[in-house]
Image (cartoon, rainbow over all chains, first blue to last red; front, side):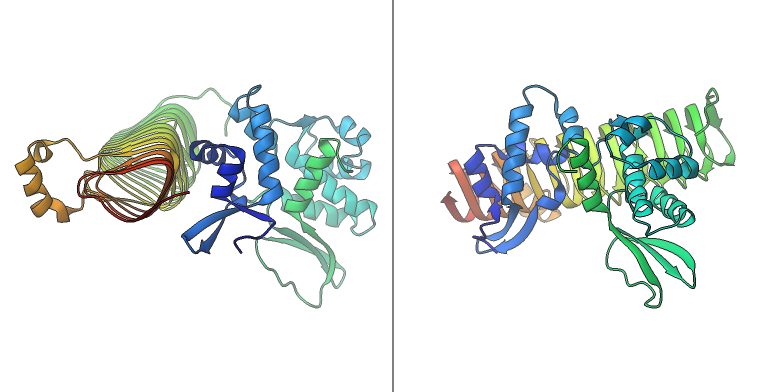
Length: 208
Length: 248
């Protein structure tokens, strides 16, 4: 709703930060501002675009601060939810507590031994490692989930469900709402966007 | 993708291949590729259908090409017809033929002299059109220059500099001819239509839009604009029709 304190309209944003339409559209094109932050709403002047207030103001400040030093493409990679240039050795991932030992071992066994690891592999290892450590999944089930996640066409999006029925584990991934078999036991429900964000934090040395 | 040394491929007759990596791929006959294909150059003078994606450094389509998967075309020239059922990524795009894309397009510089239809969003640094285009999504550009030749349309247009100018062709060169053009050919629809246009420097002619927002706005002849919201300057010229203009 217009006037919502948590949101800022495009017009207000331009006024407040002094950036131009050209810059805003360019940054969106280069992936510096996520498309999901552009929320269209009907307003009394016709349709208007709103942004989550604190996120967009932080982001604009960060872009303005960094763009003197590096070019837009490097910046995009830095701000992207799945940094493509990132590589971490398995040993380092273990030491920094990004992926647990059992997670790394299963990752290497299921998807092949790769070292150093990219962002997507770290994410997969972290998710499955966490479930193994918590005793939610067995190794077989973990491998199943890893393979499903690795083949998922929308990395970092949607939800992964791990279920068990009559002692047999199975999993599926969904982009929208999902209603699994009510008789099956839900072993884990993984929200991929939030796990992605959480891994980014961990890699930046923020919250664990 | 195979790691063997890639070779050139020339298709003269009719062939079906599984896909793979090539150096220079040229099609004069009919080619069907069952999977993804990657090459240094792709030129099609005949007919090509790719069931997977297409990745190439230089792509030239004189005949007909259809790709079901994502296309990363490098520098792309379309003289014939090209249909992308998924997305298109391109450095320099020049289209004098017909280009259709079902998904989004990411480009650096674009020149449309023919016809282009895009179902998704279109991103480009430079976009110039002296042809006709239809974009169902957002057209986001640093610099847009359109001289509408046929009806051109985008749901939304946003960027730095946006210029739409009447074609300085034969029928616009003399006032009388201009009048004739207006009254007899006006219905042919050589104009640009958009719901919303936003830019820093906006100059419009022969444009219909519901809302135009920007810093410095000029609305020229042949325009019908619902609302103009400007920050610094606003001019209306000629027979421009502007419902409402307000400074914000």
